[in-house]
Image 1: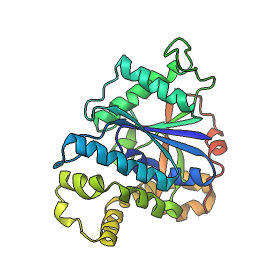
Image 2: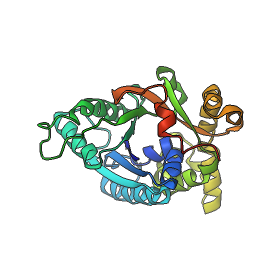
Image 3: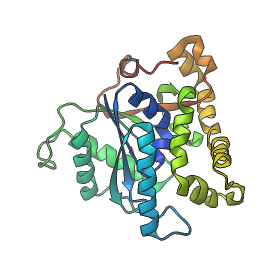
Length: 270
């Protein structure tokens, strides 16, 4: 399968579906991360140019560890808007890879860049098959299956779960990828929530800090969707500690009752 993850920021894809990505690429599937924003706003000390360059390097390093490809759209960070120009650029990018599965933010997400990325995907979806829209790229002959994903619990209430992915066996890979995002995980994001003084200097201590800080979100997802995991994996679903979740989208190819089972049948519990 060809899978595309369209997220607003460089590091969003790893945070949202880094575990799923590791599982997919291990089975030979192709995963492409598309970061819409240029990354220039994501630091409190560096210039926009320095931040953008550094974040691109971090994204490429993280994707390499997960076996994924990275594409950068270079839209100004914190200024993504659902314009016709941006819609055309996104249609061209999606057609370039012609994915079977497309994953993005939900329309109810907290960040304006996330929200408008989701809106751009919605606006682009039907146009993927319209030959005269962006006529210099061939139209897709089959619509992708489109899913939403999010790791902030407050925003899950608006969404209908489609498939749970146990990630216990790939947590190390997921967090190795997140560790590549040094500017975000150890500088910018801690600064935004006032915990910069808690970030260690030692490499292994930093890894431990990152895991202790960010891993509870994926434990909460597993606990919240325990019934779904049991439905999918039987009694083994009770033992899942960490999970990522895909939610239904009204966009794209219709999700039938057995669609997710068919798509993700190779990603069973270890």
